[in-house]
Image (cartoon, protein in one colour):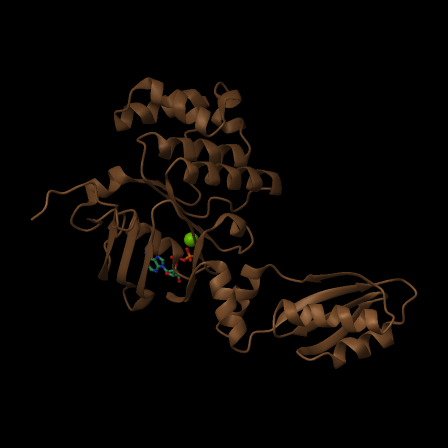
Length: 322
Ligand SMILES: Nc1ncnc2c1ncn2[C@@H]1O[C@H](COP(=O)(O)OP(=O)(O)O)[C@@H](O)[C@H]1O
Ligand SMILES: [Mg+2]
């Protein structure tokens, strides 16, 4: 046997195998399997009631699975819960905060509770950029500020893996952008981030991988663009919105777009705007633009109507809503 040189860490940050969760007669999560690699920002996405929180509660050792296993950095959540709790920073949805104290006191309290020295508090305050809030009462903070304080709290024991249940829900657009930037910073600092969301576009841009959950089952998993591609190879249709020069004839433009191969369902939206469904990806868009220009119709712009992730989500969950 050769001496062990430093081996690359091939154990996933999170490994879920055949996870099922039943509450009485109700199957909340069914036979879920996926891995999350180190350093990923992994989006766990699905409509309300899909089973996201239930899965997250198993990941964070709050619930024991009915069947299957979950490992965090190779440690089993059922057999090694204390080890797993050291490895993770878990932020529940709607986490309450102790309101009648300052942000600094709140974090000192939890630092003492998890047994980390005081200077660590300064470090997480800097990392989450809440220095100016240190002497503010927790009760006076906005929702976005409270979320950052919660995130600072779960970072105190320097966890490898962050498990965040709906960290951006109810945030205003600015706070959501700040949360997104913070998650990217944390991933750059070597953390793995696992987050859930019922709103697709909320944090989509920063997710390196997504898993889409629908009524307790995994319906798609992987990098967003790869899921998008596999959908498009089937019967997936994209939608685009076209804006033409004022003065061009809408009827003429409609006829030209409709006659282009790969285009379906052309709808004039308002004067100068057309919406159309198409297959064949960007090549079809290019063909539409060429045909219009050749036909003397000036094109001002053409844009996909939905974000890629939104299209993927709509495709994979089509017809499964109750
Ligand atoms: N402790 C429980 N007892 C019974 N049913 C539950 C329990 N926890 C969750 N459920 C049910 O499981 C389903 C999934 O819930 P949840 O995991 O909270 O979904 P999500 O977080 O995706 O909105 C829901 O139908 C919910 O009512
Ligand atoms: Mg939930």
